[in-house]
Amino acid sequence: MEPRLAAKALQAAIKDPQRPMTIADASAASGLALRDAESGLHWLTSAYRGHLRVTEDGDLVHVFPAGFTKPWETRDAIDRALAKTGRAMLGVGRFAVRAWILVVLLGYTAIFVAMLIALAFARSSGNDRDRGSGFGVVGGMFRVLGDALFWTFRPFSPLYYAPLDYGYANRGRKKQPRSRSAAEGIPFYEKVNRFVFGPETPPEDPNAMRARVVSEIRANQGRIGLADVMRVTGLPRDQADPLMARLMLDFEGSVEVADGGGIFYRFKELRRTATTEDAKGKQMPVWQRPHALEPLTGNDAGANVIVSLLNGFNLLMSAWVLEHGMTIQNMLTLFSKHPPVVMPDPSLPIALGVVPLVFSIGLFLAPAARALFRSRAKTAHARENARLSILREVLTHAPKKEPVSDEALRAAYRKEMGVEPSSKEITRRVVDLGGDVDTGPNGEIRYRFADLEAEAEALEDERAQASDEEAKLGRVVFASDR
Image (tube, rainbow, N blue to C red; front, side):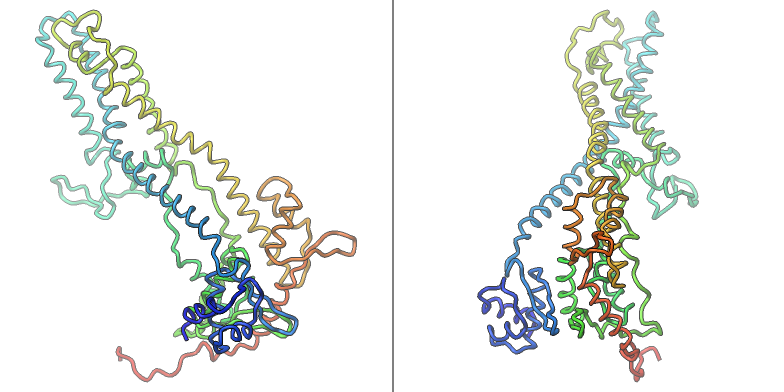
């Protein structure tokens, strides 16, 4: 019977799923064969985050703290919805910023530069009667604007970006490869995007964690324990159990109980390899890949300075425009044949004042707001690294049947968090890893992890007895390449 169908039958037959049950209990309640009850319980353990216990006689007991319910689904669904909404809003924001960069940041910079140049010409020729209707000055202003945009985005401009996939600047010229560094390959609009929203984090491969566990299985003669899983993934114990139940179903594994009570998982089929090596090697422990805090912008200092200067210039010029009531109509009046001493219509300049002012302020506020919330993210990263440091201390000593001192756990926490942990925090971490309080010869507090000690002993014996024949393939009797 398929594990999914066996699990469905068990769900219908078991009246109190929160009571501990053996495979025999499940078989008696449902009428399923022992092998079907076993596969169904493993499926349920994976789906409902169940746990495994072992008795001193080696009997395996399945425990479902939440029964056949998923109280975490609401929380996870809310988190996924918030994350999805955040990604959607961030995507819209990124698109809007990219679309507005040319118009607002660089466009307004060019407009304001042209305005200053035109004002300078207007004042220097204030007594020149050959100005005509002023159309030439206005035309000159737009000429300067056009030149500014041209020199900003033409191929030889430092702000121009050509896709690296092509690597050629072929504007009517012979194709020649352009040498570009990694920093030069980032388009200017992306640097502004990073300035506002921060660097974009690539999504993690959903199968990466499974791949690390499978590689660790193969590197350990097809035998693995929860300590190995936690070492390479960093998952807490209550999440490592369901993961292994899922892997047993996907990779034809089995859970075994040693004479000493240690639980381990056996995956003989995963050892099959066409190479001479059993595996590529053990995976790097998760604490050697600590969570790093993302940079505020991801740009170099030069790019941030350029964006800040351009935006600051727009901010000052838009404030000047608002102070002097420089509407588009007033600008045209200023360049007429007889410019008035006082502007005839001191109305609010929307296009040249309000829009660039609000945008420039927002462009500065966005990274400032992210900097304020950065302390919260820094604390979250430090707390996760502290958890991994405690995990490192436990997994370094427990498999050797060495007690872990309370001071060692506190020191690991202090190193990452910079503050002294509370007794409640240390106790919670110890309980999560299945530890018990022990007293040393001098009365000091220390912790023992009996499950991890028994697991390590069982794995050592099992791996020593694992046959190399499990990894070998039979003789090739047909090959299409020969």
